[in-house]
Length: 186
Image 1: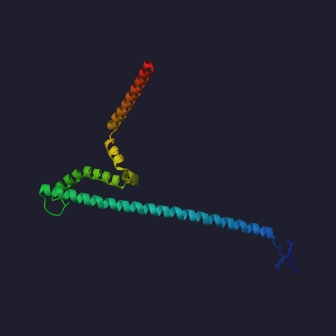
Image 2 (image 1 turned 90 degrees about the vertical axis):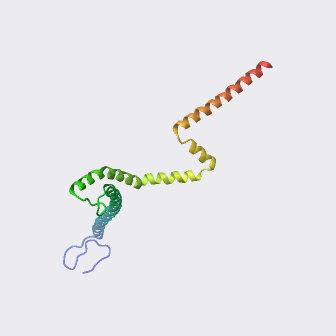
Image 3 (image 1 turned 60 degrees about the vertical axis):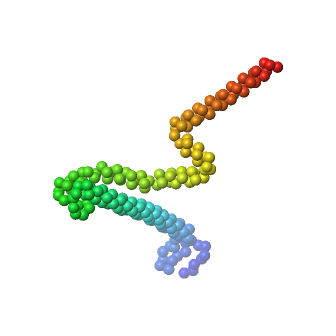
């Protein structure tokens, strides 16, 4: 069987018609496009999974820190309760079921308050705000720091603004009166 380079209707050794090269390229291109879509979807799924893993790790670390904080708070709080109540044994252990019930009921509100304080300490926006505020305060000169510390209260700022406006008004009126009296004298 003779094969010609440009002929699209050449016969194959099995006797069937050979598909054209343009058709073969189109088929291959579709397969490549499908494989690229699959690869893109797989990469996107892997990226989402990595983000989910990082979020779960961060949440896990936060939960462990929170649990440690609560344990330390509970140990400190129950040891002070044990010292006040005269109960013996290990800190946090109640001597009777009634003591355990009263201990758990008395620690619920302080633990909630401790949780709120803990979460406030961990708030990244609040930490960033505190860091930026201290950085900006360190940049100020001594007179600026003094003015900032004196004018921190809104009522002090209002009084200062009123005082400065009154002084400006007084200077304006005195200047206007002198100007008017100098024109009248001449």
